[in-house]
Image 1 (cartoon, helix red, strand yellow):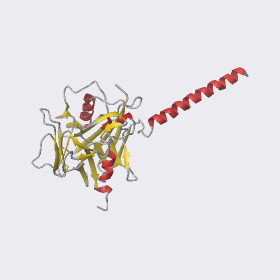
Image 2 (image 1 turned 90 degrees about the vertical axis):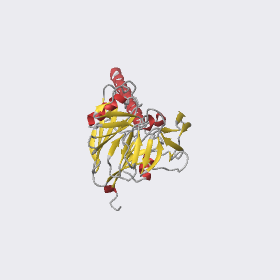
Image 3 (image 1 turned 30 degrees about the horizontal axis):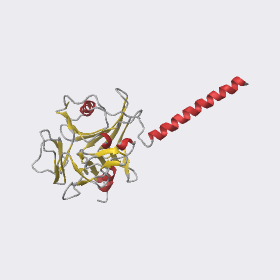
Image 4 (image 1 turned 90 degrees about the horizontal axis):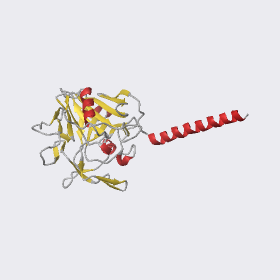
Length: 299
């Protein structure tokens, strides 16, 4: 009887270890998206794709492909809040989506002031005044003109009819949002981009004819879930998707992709990592959003 009793003890310990491991992973994973490939149409003119790569590290990638010619689809940038001082009040991407009744939103440009020393010592909180780093406009109102230096941030200009142009200022600016650096130009990845340091990333790109818009958010800084991408890897991804031109937006703890859920509330599609807490959104300056008239039949 003793060998049988020992066998049961071994099985009990093994099952307990497995249970604790799965429970621990469940706590660690929280509400993060399952690390499984997925492709589906989420709105008229908007397709979502979740990509999983195992090499050179495990990484979860979220891609929205948007048909800018879809009926009733309008592109949008965070409007100015304050007439004097810092033009914007910081808000999370989910707050932006809900406040302006949008169906899709991602974080935008880097901004100042910003710091994150500890969970108790950081800036901005929601509502704190901030200024985007680059040229910014919404609805024809220009509220930031960028840093005065020899290497201004790249800028995407968006017309009232969703026409997209990178770095060529139109005669009349309607919407504008800037980014960290160009990733793709003329269909080719930009040379000499960093290929060593992976981080969470946000990027925006467009096809050569401007019809197709690509929104990309890469999860990172989350061991055993997603390690992020380098700028060079991100550029290769955008080029492979079909972007003729693309730029990175603010990354790291700012990287966030949100859609309107079936209940009308914001739904995270990625796993943001502000304060190194999975699922925790950072209040940021401006954002890029999509409004779909099909979601507002009474308007």
